[in-house]
Length: 183
Image (cartoon, rainbow, N blue to C red; front, side, top):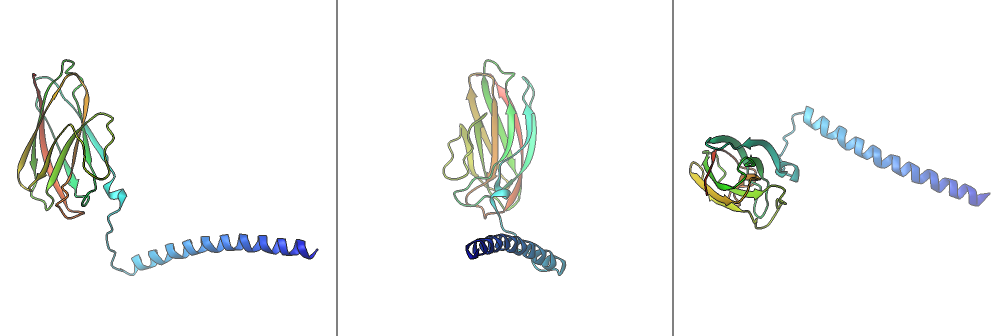
């Protein structure tokens, strides 16, 4: 009988400690809400969620037409990547061509890096990238150009981010024009 009582007491204590852990989480949540209501200063911490790759748009490239696009980029910090992605659909060029991308970087604080990857390529989250073509360390307020020869119609991933020399969290804007020339 005493053994059964001790086992029952142990189970009750385990269940109670689980409930206690949940109530600590609730207390922490309530404390954060209370501080927010009181006007406490909140420090912005850049997390992996801020650096997650985002696909904003697909630009469908058409023979004889120059396409345009724009975006905002974020500096991920040294040795990290946090791409803003625009898909460039060149499937109408079944015999391939030369992809010409001209980029105008805004006057924001972040320098920029632009990488071109094939459709479905694994985009790195850190370390040196291995793109098909690139323009790295583009200063604010300047222009860059990427040219890439391809053999058949495909979709490319045009990736933009702040360069590793920019302060983590700095942003900038960019505009680009894309056209496909003959090989």
